[in-house]
Length: 189
Length: 323
Image 1 (cartoon, each protein chain N blue to C red):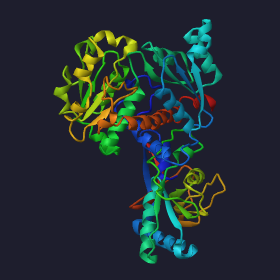
Image 2: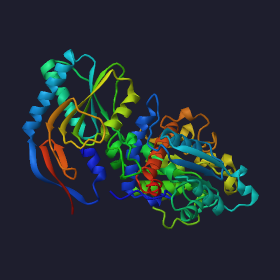
Image 3: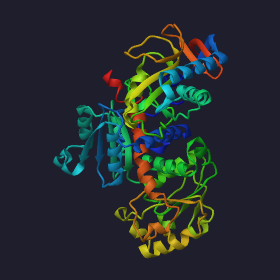
């Protein structure tokens, strides 16, 4: 589950204990480069394409994608950030807190929005993000880019761009950071 | 992070960490308020009741707007047209309201301690104090902190800059629940609070008040103040009898244009409202460049959204009995 969700569900005092690194920092960088090319290939010319990173795990990946697109395509892609806390369907069932305020400084009407997150798990975050996006205009197309697809979907949602497909157990934890991607468990201290 | 308390009855319910949490969540709701459609589904299916036993314009409207912007249903209870008139006790009224299935009650009452009593009578319902007698008005203090933090650059840095901040609270402190909440709130973040009032309008004892100093001369305090927080002379609580005349009060403690000129250029002026022009504040508020009074009102909605969300959205009170 994305970093954002993990910090909410984490029982007090529990820590992430990595067991295996599944992607190095270089692997993540290569995946970003490939996904940027795929985005450019699918959206020829990148006309009207905007990136929206989900708070907080998707934000840095969205920025890296934008930087790569600027490099290889010479295109300046607007980047926004989105927090979905107020649109979640589990408010009241477990602690839900916004990580940071949404910042989308442009109208989404008519654009192709590429939603960017670090980890795709149940799909509930993306469901909430689709609802939240509607507040900023009617996008023509919404696509989804994730660094890790770990399976266990609970909703009919699939990514368009994937850094790595990673089979996991439900109780495992995926951590995405600047140092790479690790698989591990939550342990109580 | 420590869990958010089940009720918000007094500023004592929140430590510095809890205050920081409210202000941070409020940032997200300020963003919501800027949208074309300033409404989110966060508290869909929840019901919030406002029980105001005392007059109010901004606090009630602010709370009701806050709840509606989070898609909660809002019931507005007017004491004057309720069964209290038929002799029903406050306790029975409150228990009835809880039995109807309300998730949060927002109470204002002329008697100190009523919200705390009510909190002891209910099990499934969060209680928010919207002002009780001379005692507390915590959401007012929180929105003041939010407004000052904004003027200090916002975010965690804004909070850090409260350390050593010079805050003057001016006016009828004796009768003011706002002052009592403010003093605790500013002190929790490390600010130095100076109370400024004629001796008659100070509380009988300042024991336990975390204030740095007390002054009876506003002119002496203005130059060193970063924040000047004005209070109304509360004629309805008999403040008038504590000063020789309102004109004399204005002469000594009113923030006139002349006095405002003594302030540092980046000093800010707050007032919880309602303002009485020409008494505690200049008749033309536009003469006071550092005034954040309008910002306070708009920030109030976002801060109250944050408080309601933290009380009802965390899976403790309200949602718990529905599982």
